[in-house]
Structures are given as structure tokens and as C-alpha cells.
Amino acid sequence: MTLGDRLRRVLRQQARKAGEQYAESKRAYTEGREEGVPESDWPDGDWSESDGPETDGSSRPDDSTERLRVDPAVFGLPATDDGDTRIVCRRHVERRTVAVDTEGRPACFEPGNDDCEGCAVDVREGRVQTW
Image (cartoon, rainbow, N blue to C red; front, side, top):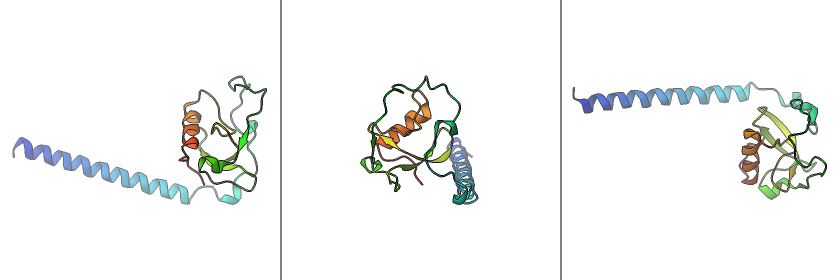
């Protein structure tokens, strides 16, 4: 067996292994979604500050001024009857119903948090995960 043949065999084995791992991950993800918390057990209404981790509020700029709320459709997101949107929070890995401000930041946005910053970018681009 030549070096080229061995290399092809190793590459095929690794590709097959990666495919199997992908299939297993996809199956586990689908299974987890199907076995998740029933919608009837989801919290209702807005998520207040007390629903997240406790903070002293010092990390939020402009707490003294209220951010302007906009229709989520501006960012291509579905809206609830209350004018909020439903997103999947990256930071807490949970479903949330939140308002969105003019800069595309959800009401639960925390400046400096990588997950929140990425979520805001996705909201502005209309590609945040919704439910």
C-alpha cells in the first residue's frame, strides 16, 4: 500500500467518523427539542431583571434613560400581540419574550457579554433564533 493509498484511507475514515458524530449530535439536538419543557410550563409575560442573574445594574449604560422600543418586524422578526418578539437567549439558553430597542438590542441585553453582543448583531440582521 502506497503513502497515497494510506492517506486516502485515513481521510475517508476521518470523514466517516465526523459524519457519524454530526449525525449523533443532530439526533441528540432533535431529541432534546422534542423532550424539552412543554409550552404550557413556559413562563408568561415579560422577563424582569429578577429572572436573570443578580446584578447591581452598573453594567448597563444609560439606565436612567429608557430605550425606545420598536416593532420587531423592523428587524424581520415575528411579533407577539404585545409587540414583543420571542427569542432564544444565548446567555441563559432559554426561550424569552422580550421587547427590542431601536438599536436591535433585546430588553435583556447586557453590554460586554459576548452572548448578548452576538445576539444583538443577529437581531439586527434578522437571523436570531426565534420560537
